[in-house]
Length: 605
Image 1 (cartoon, rainbow, N blue to C red):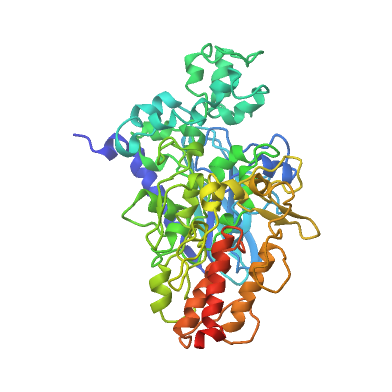
Image 2: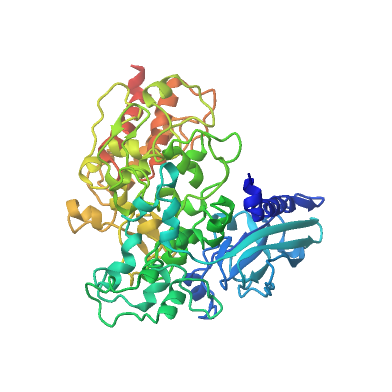
């Protein structure tokens, strides 16, 4: 009986090349710590506009499975500690290609002004050189690069690329309509992606749907004459199908079955062409599974109306620190990395500690396998969240996903009263869920009142932090949406606070989060609510070591007394919440006043 490798001999060869790629990527000879990799750079419509590339430049999702005739933008990257002036150059070679291929490496159209794609990667890496590969036949290609530096040594890196053709949903569904992890076609079929072209040509999606939408709403659409690979445009040309002149019901029914097979947004839009994956009997190495944002940004980065990626690029999630990742940080990656969070909400037993920014796939499950399965926008998980003090949040709407991470890591009642002081003392960095719910501060046994935001604001976090900004607004992509920022300052005199959500209850006169309400700090002057809370933080800080000194941060060590630590917990709870009372004014003010009273003169009487 034939073995798997005898039935699919290219699998053995492919795996050998992949192993060679890994080995080559670690071949470094240097006196200093030169680190290098060969990356596949996504290229979006926003990039093409921003860096004034020719209009004919092809978009790329940055996958290693790529349609024949489509571009692969390769870039050799080195660690940021290597100065640009130390890089001598990069020697490129196409060391492996399929029989019959005439493909060759050519100059990349991306100039030095084009940065590394992922904002988080720009913080740690720089580009040493770029090249372009365009597969011309199906099969496996290997690109190698030798990076030479003046004083940091030499690095040899490699990358495998698989050229393929598109097969469409009928072929994918043969296997991916099974059980367990393979059962993705059925859930996908219920998503908006699965019907976007259908609704467009039927006049349901909008009244201005046109042929320009097809590049994103169909499989493998690429008008470049070299990109003949079974994509929607190729099949349409073969069948002589043309875009309907009128958008109306029945248009999709009239589309030939062969064209329907590559219509709508399907598996291969995000995973690359599947011909080689199918030919090998489902070898997972021959299909891409992206953990970066390129697969989504090939369509969601086209301002002014497709701006989700541009918004995310300006978010803090896009530059999440690498510090709490890697081996030994299993308890951190569930919130600090994209793949770690996905594993956390899925309940994976083996924790992936590799770094990846919190991006599209972190919060959205593209196959529609969400919890619950009916939730909007493919939000990955909206199951209720249990906070560390035992409180279960069940009514947070879309904001429930945020609360999986934006919550305290401690049970305040026990932790603040019993834990010794250290530089790591506190509730952790983002206790917003606890603050919004009005729980898990250190209450000194008192009942602290709570404001109503957590109960009356539908979708909680999302309602305020992801508000829509008009396409003509100067703040577009800087605030709201997937920036998750409720306010923005352009560095001059322009400050934008997204107060529309506030005005629903507080009235149209509210033009800033810092609007006056009450004299919370007791100084006889009613100032903006955030100013009042800041004054209370300042009052409490004066009572904490070193006493009598104004401070914007606390330096906690083992000499702090337990009353000081209890008050410090509340100071950090409010400070790390970041809203200066907006999330829950009553609870914020109550905690700070209770702490001040406990440390003040009356505490010793």
